[in-house]
Image 1: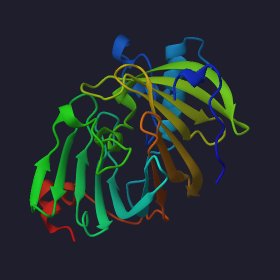
Image 2: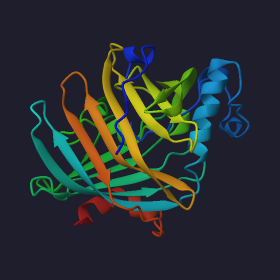
Image 3: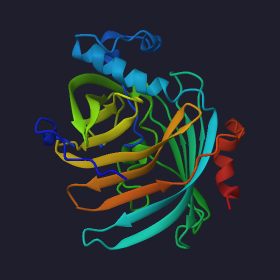
Length: 285
């Protein structure tokens, strides 16, 4: 797995998600409609228009997958380098339009102390996301307050909001520069959350110029200090749908790290809305 080089001097004053895949800058201020993503010009001279176009291009590469599931290993590494690991599974239901966010379910399989813990997310665009956490020890479903979405997810360096933060219209965008990471040409776009209660003032997103995927995200905290860097590598092609198989998140303020390593994705599932309702959390095994 190639290790990316440090950011350029200009981007060095920054360094964020996941998930990674975001886009467009003028939506909030100009009233640009989501349909404009189809016509956005990546060669535009206006930094906001260009930033939006680059992000929209990334977003378009992920459309049409329907639903998916995948198993993964989460590796937590403390500042001393000590590791613990967890096995988990992701299920996702794609929404058909940019006005509605995807639905997802994360389920922990191991170790025993978190086995059965599950996070159900209904992503919204500007309204607060709906998220519910099932805690098997208490046999209780807890709703996650929008004010607490910046908190860590089960001890990892990922935040609750990182699991729903990839919707295109959640941000405004501004093109910054084109540079390289490990010899790969990338476009750098500043993404500013439009939704309330984010733990981030802004993200710097690095989109490659070959297959148009998010390769790196730098997250800045509420004081605009660099908080975390996420590198996404080992991209594989599933009949035109690209998926990164390794996410490496570094918290620069605590020196803690979290890796998520994915198995092969399965797109043959025919999930529907009924598979992503609060009631399923009590039946998960």
